[in-house]
Image 1 (cartoon, rainbow, N blue to C red):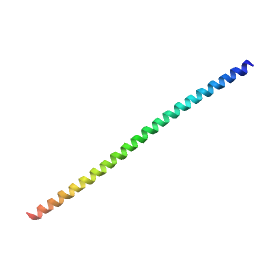
Image 2: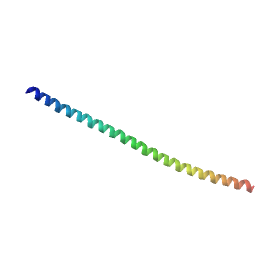
Image 3: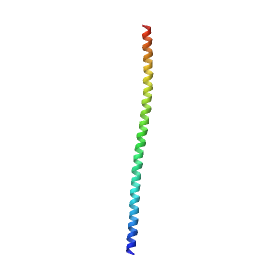
Image 4: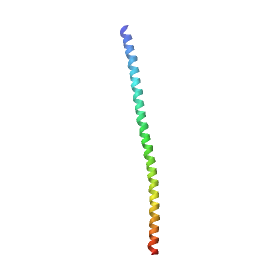
Length: 75
């Protein structure tokens, strides 16, 4: 009878310990996923900003080029 009680106690403790480890592992995985999603969002935001900057620079280049051509043919 004592053997069965010790076996049940061991089973309960093992189940609790495995559940604790599972929850801990799950929280760590969620934390990593969150960090990855934040990094992706920041990267997308940077890409969007860089694309906008590229468009602005291309417009400035076109304006400078057209002004240069205008001055070239004027003088």
